[in-house]
Length: 404
Image (cartoon, rainbow, N blue to C red; front, top):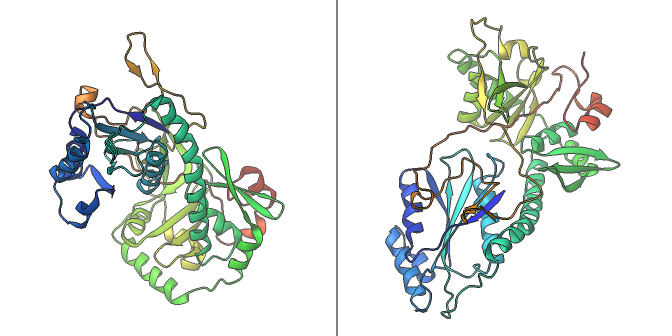
């Protein structure tokens, strides 16, 4: 995770830069705050925001460069637009801009999710917001709020997972693993990790209480089978090994699988299918997560795995279903440094983070990356997954079964 405060500007060019992104469907306005009565109106133009910021800034004639424009970027898709919005809001508050009028615009046209923040350095009393050691404080505050935001997000994700109709602890763990967490049973509680750090715990008894309330929805399963059979006719059911990009830029196969049918069910009906198997071997089981109805089913409750993926089709070339590598942010964030030429250097700046053309000197590249969770789960469809997890799952921190 990095933060970059862009060079000062006498005008509010950052507003036009970001609203142009929105008009081109490359950005999304996530939050507008502290613009007073202006926020009561609909269909505001970019110039309306600029006029408000300029009016505030004119209360101080001494400040020549009133625009405040900054960017927070994560590596890859490790943080969603909602997470970045919450992070940016708390970061602005820590930097002294919490009561300032500001815009938050999420950019989605590069390999790294990032959010732009535009505000004014002049407060309502005509005084300049403190900018002493600004670049150093930017990282200090980012580190502080990241810890707060990550724990808040974990609390939301746990409550969301507990709200699903689940029959085993393993299914609960899968719901969190799909969000990038890993879990380890320690006594009577599960420790939850993400980004290489312990984020929190959850009592195992709370999960058991939820699994005891499980009720199989036969009508919903029949409906899902009808949907699946309908689209099996027009979409390839063959399981394709998922690949990801390595740090060297080459592709490598992972134990994950997908198919045209799996992709269709996810995009059209919110049905997430997790195919379980070993590298180089066909999947032997699967789990169905019905996000629309918040239920998790063993694949065998829908149809046998052999029927769901069908016979493997031969091909002259091994088809691949590419996804972007999930790269975790570093736990230690380096502050900005200066190069020998005196220019600011950003050693941790991801290559996919965009900057305004007047700052970077060239138009940003549009690199689209499709993110899917890369999960290695081995849950046999004809065996109770919870009964055979045991020490293997605890050792690997992943959902696993025996290797029969």
